[in-house]
Structures are given as structure tokens and as C-alpha cells.
Image (cartoon, rainbow over all chains, first blue to last red; front, top):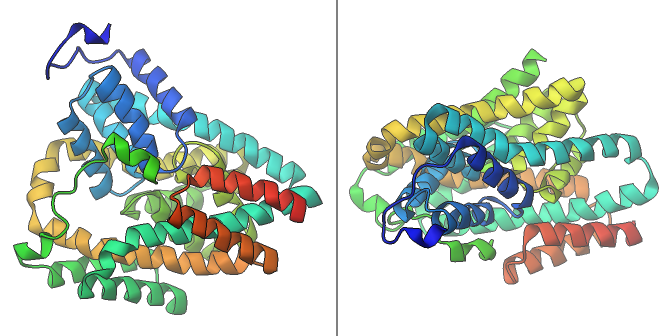
Amino acid sequence: MDSSIKGNEEVAPPGLLQLAIVLLKVGATGFGGAMPMLALVHVEYVEKRRWVSQEEFDEAVMVGQIMPGPIAVDAITHMGYRLRGWSGAIVSIFAFILPSFLLMLALTLAYIRYGGIPQVAGIFKGLGAAVTAIIAAAAWRMGKPHLKNVKTAFLMAAALLALLLLQANVVLLVLLAGLAGMMLFRKPSDFQQGGKPGGPKASKGGAN
Amino acid sequence: MLDLFLTFLKIGAFTFGGGMVMIPFIEQDAVNTFGWLTQREFVDAIAMGQITPGPIVISSVFIGYKVAGFLGAVIAMGAISLPTFFYSIAAAHQLHRLRNNLRVRAFLKGVGPAVVGMILAAGFTIARASLVDIWTGVLSLACLAVLVRFKADASLVIVAAGVIGLFLG
């Protein structure tokens, strides 16, 4: 079916129901953070169904990276809007979040009821150890590029200390860091090293 | 309930850089300011958010539920998603201007490293709450090694850690 159209031409935009079904599936099976989830979306939107082109997909990922909020949710809502307008955006965000919302609700109820049982407490001690490691690994992955530059390394250390030692307000920290960025990075050459913020190629998915 | 809505709206509006950034934000407001949950429950909420598919923000459901039941869960999740929703749509119209605007890029280039510092800071307090004895410390280091060295999938690592915890805890 999908091979009926060749080349860069896209097929007609999906129906809302179709969009919802695809995103319910991604929302229910997307583990491991934004990039692995977006790899699943890439398979559905770009490879299998050709709803969006590679370029549009990369652009949506960039939207996810620039805009506040979870990267995958940003990107998916953005593509939903470009495919089907407001209704596409609303259907996309709802369908994507619904499976994990229901699962999380079920886990919450179970936790409140059974959290006190010693075996369950043991499980959560193990999970807590893993969460600590996951956060450290994420900070390492996200922070490594910033260590190469004195200015960004300084901003990272300053934010760390301000929050850890002074309990500075997080919103204020974000705004101050942004202002500091506007003062520190004025020349176009400041942006060369990062290059174009490219999207994740599907191959990147497993790496995270 | 209004506090819950406004807090999660604010978190949704300022978490530049993806879901992980939400962790220091939620910790500051939900744990330290409002006392909606303990540090231990906060770690457990993040753990549950990792076990479930989908974005990490889903941990908000736990906090919302603790504050105000089912309605609270809906409010927390809705409020944190609302800014994301409008940003994504606004981006459809402004993307090219945003991408080429040097001041926007300079702003984001400043925010990028800062949020990593903030995640690290949250990591410290979370480590203090969750690494309570030798085996949790060793397990955490082992998880870190597997994650960084072998780029293991976070959801697999967390499930394995839960199984280990069932036997050792």
C-alpha cells in the first residue's frame, strides 16, 4: 500500500482516527526517553506512512529541542498541527499521553495501597538506585558537549552550585542563564561548533 | 488545587531542554515548597515514570493524585502539558525566525548548560534519598556503568534494578 507513491511526494494527510491509533501505539510502547520514542515516530510518520518528509521531521525535533517541555511531546504536537491543524495537535498530544497516563495512574494506586509492604519497599530501593544512575547518566550525556567550552562549563557549574548550595529559584536560574548566554555569545562564531541542531536519525534511537 | 495547577503550568512553561529538566523543578516546588510528597516518594514517582512508557513528565500524575485524587492527576498532567501544546503550535509559525535569531540562540545556549547543572544538583539530593546503604550505592554505580559504558536502555536497567531490590531489600 505505502509503496504506491514513489519519490518525495507525500501521501494525503492522515485522518484524525488514524493519527490517534498510531500515537496510542507509540505512547504505549515508547520506552527510554525522547530519542527512542522519536525513532518509533520516525518509523510510523516518515518510513511507513510518509505523512511527513525527513526535513519536516527534523524540523519538528528541533522544535522539541528549542521549546520548553518534553522533546517528544513538543515534536509530536507540532507535527500534528502541521498535518491536521488544531484538531490534529489536540488529538496527537492526547493520544500520545493517554497510555502512559493510565499506566501511571494504575501504578500510583498500587503504590499507595501496597507501598508499605517490605518486598515492595525493597523493589523501590532498587529502583531508586537506578533512578540516581539514570539521572547521572543523563547529566553526563547532556553535559559532555558543554564541558568543551569554558563559558558553557562555567554556566553549568554556576547553576549546579546555585541550586545545591543556595537553593536558588529554578525559574530565576533559567532566566539568568539565558541572559548570561545573550551576553556571552554575541558572535556568530560562538554557534559554529554545535552546527545545525539536526534531528535524530532513526539509527540514533537505540543509543540512548 | 489552584496551587497544583499553577505550579505545574509554571514547570511546563520553563523546562527548556526536555523531560529530565523537569526533575529539579518539581523537586523544588512539590517537595521543598509545598511538601506534597517526601523526597523518598519523589524518587519513587520518578522511578514509576521510568517504568511506564512515554515521557518522564508522566510522574506528575503521581503527585497530582496524592494532592487531589483522580482530578488532581488530570490537573497536574494537563497543566504541565498546556504550555508544551501552545509552544509547539506557536513554533509552526515562528520556527524560521526563531532558528535564525542569534539572540534566541544565545539565550538557549546559556540555558542549555545551566539546566544540566540543575539536573546534577537534583541528582545529588536524589542520591542522598535513595542511596541509603552499601548495596544501593553499589547497585547505582553498576547501573551507571551499564548506562554510560554500554548505552543500555534505561527502562531495562530500571526493571533489572527493581528485581535485584526485591531480593536484596
